[in-house]
Length: 200
Image 1 (cartoon, helix red, strand yellow):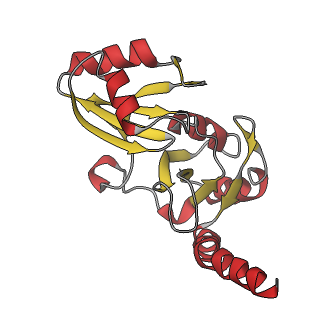
Image 2 (cartoon, helix red, strand yellow):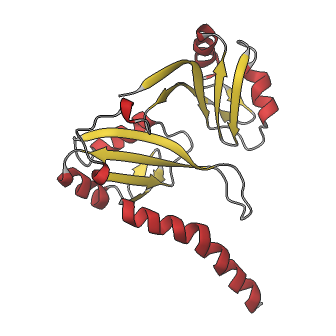
């Protein structure tokens, strides 16, 4: 189940050449912006009026801006707060998906998850890393898919890992393996680079 914010849009496939002020100036053409959350390749823009949000989707979805076609869709909240979730399902049957293309939506992820099993109960796409950090990492998307049937969950781990979604080969993890991978990614790579420099 989703909770739609009628004044907010999600913008993806933003060129790396675009800055926050550039995006704000563009989207200000259809109405007064009350809040802009800029995350390099992705952004969330909230207007003061519902009508302006609709106009932004109609005008800018597919709009060619600084070398890339923007993807603009109305924002829907699909995670976190349990009042928007069913308690009939356990998130033990949850898979994490990384290496997503920047234009991947939660609808894409849901359809992708259903190729491993029809019992998908929840799907969401979120930013896993905000902006550049000290190690030079960029903003990235990660996906979550939950199943009500353990057989579909186990099949997803086997069949979806390495499969293509929107032309990109993705990685699929269980919760335990995902936690281990994130720890290694955040800490291990920087230590590895340090050792390489020492050997020179």
